[in-house]
Image: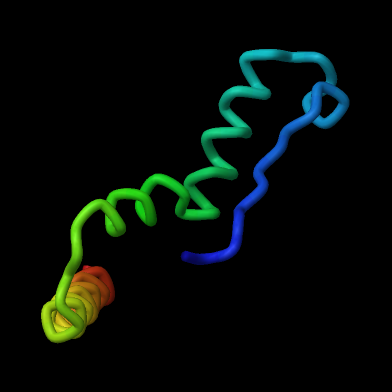
Length: 71
């Protein structure tokens, strides 16, 4: 297993606004990739499939970047 990830938001950090605190917590947990890592670890994925998916993601991102450059 990986190392534990600690995400915390204090009321002082958001000046007492609870709604803002929830939004900040969600943002920090997305940045730390907590949910994504949990979903990845639910099932075993073969290393070859991981490489294949990473290659596909890289290719798709390059295609999107190229499309954005043209516009």
